[in-house]
Image (cartoon, rainbow, N blue to C red; front, side, top):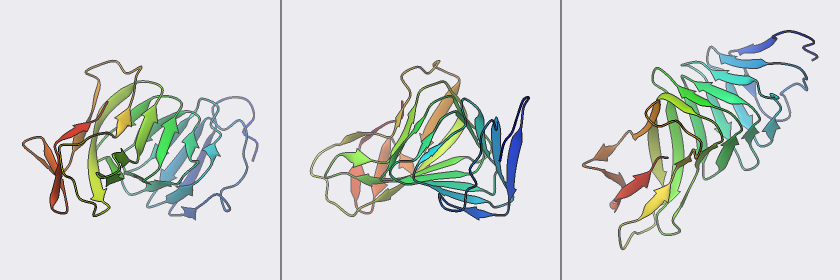
Length: 178
């Protein structure tokens, strides 16, 4: 699919897509996941600085190798599991945006986002544990956004109590969200 000159949008409504079913495209400035669409991605999504938009009913599942070569506007769910997904632009969370990650306290690792640009809006982080045991407080980076303008956006643990996120029976005492 060739977008040509100007601002072009490629919208998917109620569709299940993955690396094999996602069409090849060029010169598309905006991809929209709408009406319960689900995209499973394990490669770079070539937006050339454009935007991936995820509505409130839609989701993106990022596997190892997933990368957004542009910005993300998320009102739905992004699931990274254990993978870390780079976003080569800005990130905006709106509505009930969720980032769902898998955490391994024993190994000190987690999936998450590495955002090159600015963070805006609000996003809840939902944690899935691997069942490993924690013997001491563990700090694990979930979102990295070194170029973020402070105060414009937040990532908040959806199940934190007094700054502690509990995975199964073991606590993670500090979660770095920026």
